[in-house]
Length: 365
Ligand code: ATP
Image 1 (cartoon, protein in one colour):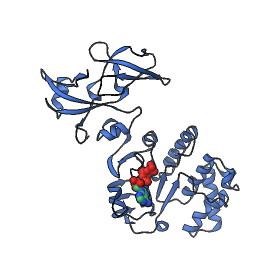
Image 2 (tube, helix red, strand yellow):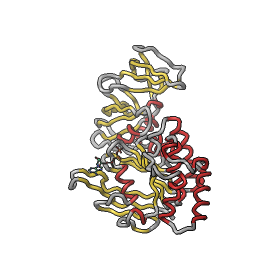
Image 3 (cartoon, helix red, strand yellow):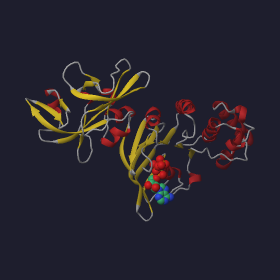
Image 4 (cartoon, helix red, strand yellow):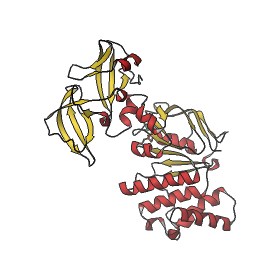
């Protein structure tokens, strides 16, 4: 069992002036693929390095498979790390690169070792390259070797530090699928760090979102997408980004109406209004994803089209709603293609309207 338990994990640098990881709690189940995502400097790499034993926590504990490894040296933890820059030994062949870790960590016979390396190389489709040196390989091949070197050791936990970011977009997609296939086949427990929210969403069973060293939300990809815990998560997950509008709450009949002074006005149905933790006079932030904005047949919010950006199956509309919102985006089907300066009336559905606390940014739903 390779369950990982992270408890109040903290890392400070520069005598506490930098808090890279701020009391992180996290459970990773055996066989779970967890992606960790967040903007630059949010503490992703530091977290991973502490899991690997390459960085000593300031406080908190790490358990792997029920064993406290907080003070266990990196080489005595049963984890394998795959790095962005591959970290292959340049003077060793692919075979030697893969066999080296095995030689260090196990006392298996030379023959067993060879079998394991060849078998893994076949699985990774690099068996033709075993006698080559790293500088004879393409970026994608190097990353396959780096993956193979980790897999051959059969570690309890795989740690990936942005392993695909040096690859071009097409290769990245192929390798993503490859890693997902391996994870399903081998049922590995993995922590995968990336700054790419799309990669985090497509690869993770569970996605961990960090900001300024603090955990923002952890959950299944569709949960963090549909029910962001706060404004930051709403804005960070999903592309193009969620739209935000500062609004006041007023009451009309038994309906609540969200409005600002610049033409945003959205009446919530009375049924939905009664379920919400807001009342007349409140100020809140409304969040609406571009794909949930659609042209209205009748009543709605009047906007002016600024830019139309075709992206194949869809058009992105940059809309002017008034002074508070710079760019309000709508993602509409490609056959809806208004001209710049055209007036377009838009609307949404209640279920797609997210509400956030104006001060804390926390979700109110
Ligand atoms: P990126 O996506 O840019 O790699 P990250 O999310 O991996 O960022 P970390 O590298 O973990 O972030 O860094 C978290 C914070 O800790 C940053 O503010 C960084 O400047 C700081 N930090 C990291 N390593 C050190 C160090 N050795 N000494 C001082 N500060 C550090």
